[in-house]
Image 1 (cartoon, rainbow, N blue to C red):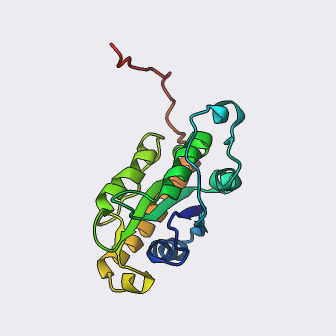
Image 2 (image 1 turned 90 degrees about the vertical axis):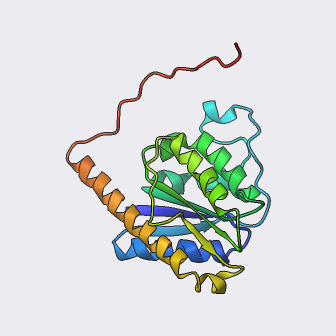
Length: 206
């Protein structure tokens, strides 16, 4: 089993990466493989609403979203992380997740996921909520910890002083490893994912 951890911060080895490393360390200690992928600090465009992915199973913008698709399909769980920008996700992670969840929703569905965030001061809970919304609209079990998944600091060295934050990251990794093994045991016992209902839409115009 393997967990894919996405670093959506513009800093490759900053606070977000340090938090992801702590999650990955806990997962590895419990026999779960990990890979941390940095999205880079170049611009990642947002969804154009063109509908191309609905019939082509790929995004019309050919960049890291398409490049990472094989890793997404092969992974058993996910952690998406970023720094806090104006009490919300970084623009790169926002654009990445918008387009990834349109093009790869079937690869992501029913796989455990978690969001983490880092900040010097505030805006963490709003960012945490924003990331989690992607999971709950796509039938993905949300992995929890002993506190909201956040670390504080201006750089990676500062995060070392956030003992509570690092404990939260380790607990998150432990909980994800446990849930992945529960899902594997259920699959081995013949338990399949729920049968979906036909789609239904409410008309909000009237």
